[in-house]
Figure 1 (tube, helix red, strand yellow):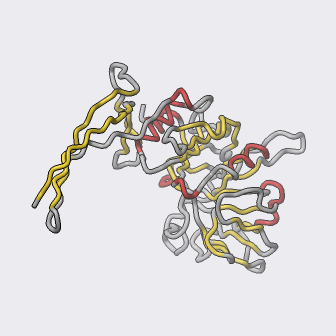
Figure 2: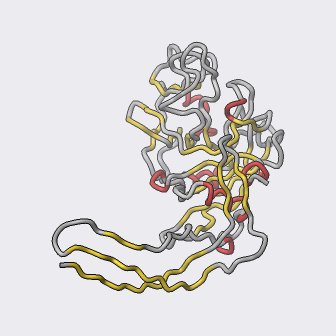
Length: 305
């Protein structure tokens, strides 16, 4: 025996312009020519035919709507850029966006937007001044360790195997609220950055051979009071830890500003740096469970416009 259940549901669908990622990793926008209402009320009938005991089950279900994006809730965060990013990677529920005025800029802004439990996007960290590599930004595939550029593109939260296990957060200061495993730096903690050596892009406990471009982390003092690993050429597939491989990037972190003797902020060797208080906010906001993404570049590059 079979029965047919008739279910009527009311569904709210939100419409927004969207962008897509092409094969080169760039975003191309597809903006509507006219303004659509942010939501519309649709009555959807769902027919479910189900066997009484065994057999196939068939359903006619409504087409799922895209995650809502309402720029008015974003406050100071850049709704245009975030709208493109949100629709390019719908599985990411958090974006750390670093906007550079041009590819040669050494100063940028950093902002964080997070999708909340109600599925709406909100500004978690309003745009704050950030410093970039002293030679600006460059696409990850085009840059090389030592060229003093910050990798541009979209990257996940980096993960590295430390003596205590996989981590994304670390620092010379005790943990101040990171939402993932945190490593309080020890005197022999070394992050490999010497190209075409087995340690390149990997963490090890070693002071005797931590040399050349390698970073003995405790020696960076307050600049590495807290740091977040950006997933540009990070484990498990690090290019440059074997002879002949291009050494694209190593030790690319979000960390605190370094200062000159006069108190001015310094450009970096490739990392992204921000002030102490915004860094604490970022540490307490970036959530590995939200599949966060770092988007680094000019507004035109990140939106495809």
